[in-house]
Image (cartoon, rainbow, N blue to C red; front, side, top):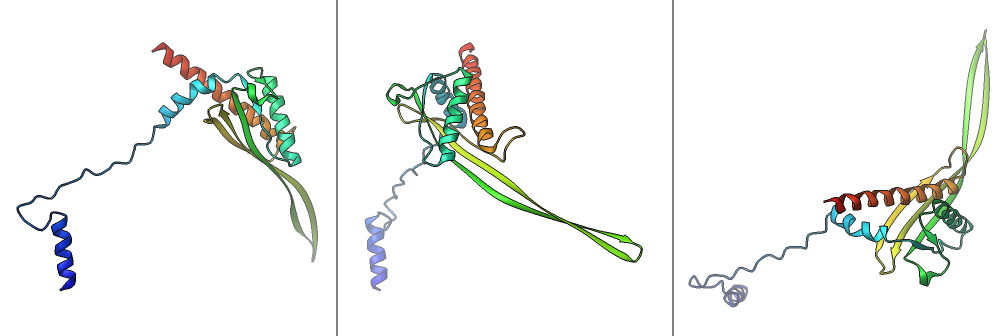
Length: 192
């Protein structure tokens, strides 16, 4: 009985208790629609295109992180697309990131059996191979703190270079490809 009285009191308070009153309907709040990938790219492309001076921040204290940073700096300098600076105050954007290299041993064992008449001959061999895996995640951050470009690259090494050098090369090439795409998109937008 107490529960029924409480339910009626709540219903009356909300305006649901009498037939003469119509309940007020509040509009359902709609979550904001996230920006489309295309609109984000259109906003970030001019920011990426305006970057001329880059400061490459520390990737960490590990020797591999320092080495990868140095290789990325060399690759960006070689591209002649950016001015690299050691003065963080004079930069258009900061390249930040982390790097990891893992070395592991992979053992491979193989056996062959040969039948020679009634005798079986077993030939076994064991090989140990050293595998280097390198991974890096980097992002280009504008002076306003916006992440205007990012990539994650990994490698087990290339034919003529180690895993870290290959990752550094992939990062620089990805940035240059994305810069070219932004340039083409900007030219298309300007032509319209």
